Amino acid sequence: MPTALRDSGITVIGDVPWGGHFSIFYETRSDLLDTVAQYFRAGLANNEACLWVISDPLTKKQARSALRRRVPDFDRHLAARNIEILSSHEGYLKGGRIDARRIIRGWQAKLRTALDKGCEGLRICGDTAWVEREHWQSICDYERKFHAALAKHRMIALCAYPLSKGRATDVLEIARLHQYTVARRKGEWEIVQTPDLKQAKQELQRQNQDLEQRVIERTRRLEVANEALRAQIAERRRAEEQLRAAQDEIARVARLTTLGTFAASVAHEINQPLTAAVANSEAALRWLRKQPPNFKGAHNTVKCALTDANRAAAVIKRVRSLLTRARPRFVSLDINDVIREVLALTRRDQDGRQISVQTKLSSKLSPVRGDRVQLQQVMLNLILNAIEAMSANKKRPRNLLITSRMNRAGSVLIAVSDTGPGLDSESAGRLFDPFFTTKAKGMGMGLPICLSIVEAHGGRLWASPNSPRGAVFRFTLPAAGKRWLRAKRRQPSS
Ligand code: ADP
Image (cartoon, rainbow, N blue to C red; front, side):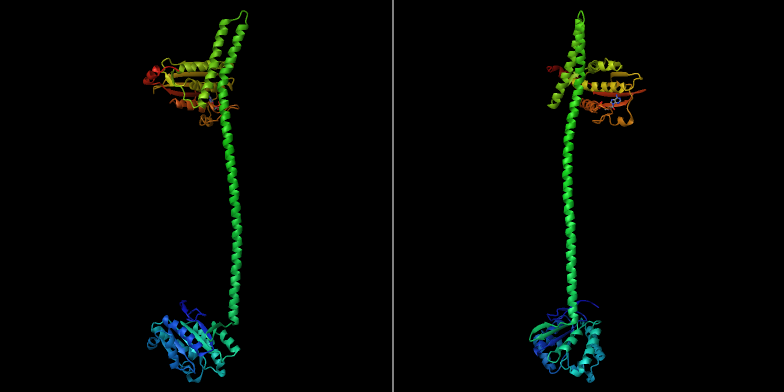
């Protein structure tokens, strides 16, 4: 059955579903007529068939004229048989007896006719002003059965009881047999309280409280969750701050480390020529202390000391230029000269570690375009690395071979080979990574610096195994172009 609600037309009752069964206790005739008119007006407006069973002393004529005054288009509805008015004898008391089944069957027949006509359903109003005391039990029995039957039909019913006739107990009994009971007294509405209604209200109140309680509980849980969320956010913020502080610290340490490493590498570069200068000066003193003094020997060693000191000064100059971002000084140079200079500088290391040094320097090299100090630095690093690699093993022959030649591409190719332990597969891939070192006091900056210098000169630097043992470090330098050389020659030397 459709559950669509019907407008009862009675404000205090509102919308009711099909099967709605309600009663009204009225005080005056106009209380009855006003209520019935409102009820039918809504029914007719919503295409329901309407049936009014009136009661003495109201006559059909009076009923019609009362509705005519209160219901729009009443006569049209009457002519279309949308509304029918029956007397209590026709409606309830056929044969002078209240027969609940017969009466209900009568309503069901009226409903079928209404539905056949295309109406939505049937709306009944029965006035019980005719009911006398002796009918009371039968009318209650009828109401009970009607109540049960209504639930299955597209019908709604309003049972009207005059207040003047009913006793308080009767009112309550009637109220109990209906879903809603209202009273109309001189135009004013009152809702009749019944134990069921009271219970329903209490149930509603209980459910409301329950709902409220659930809302409170839910709100509390949300607040707890919110609080936890807030705490998590605060915790996250704290963690982020800690992370930021840690990152700052890392950056600070990294700056210090870079500076420290840089300073150490500068020290390494300067230390070599200074050590050599000191050694040569001591040698010169020894020559001079001889009897008679050997001025020639002293002169030669002082000259060597001077060269060493100049190299140290050049390194310092280079570092200074690096710090002031001065551009490298590219000149045309013979790389063989650079190799010889560096070999001379490292003689002390070679001798001290019993290294046999061999050179195969091509006399047909093209000049290269380069910064002398930077290229010295490359050679120095490669030679010192080779010497250090071979120093570890005392038994093997310690052969350092330095070669230079032109390669097929027209570049100068320099190779530094040793007979040390060579490169294991792990180190081979990381040799040029900054700070990669296998030495206890190593810095891991030598090879990365060499790589960046060679690349800045337009060359390549790489390492490979030597045969039968050791390592070979090779680098190329592009030959200085003729045009550049001509231009360079025209420039005044600085
Ligand atoms: P450092 O000499 O301070 O370790 P380098 O960058 O010059 O820094 O060298 C990095 C590493 O490369 C060395 O620690 C060593 O393990 C390896 N290496 C360099 N040259 C040789 C070589 N001739 N033979 C074997 N290993 C070498």
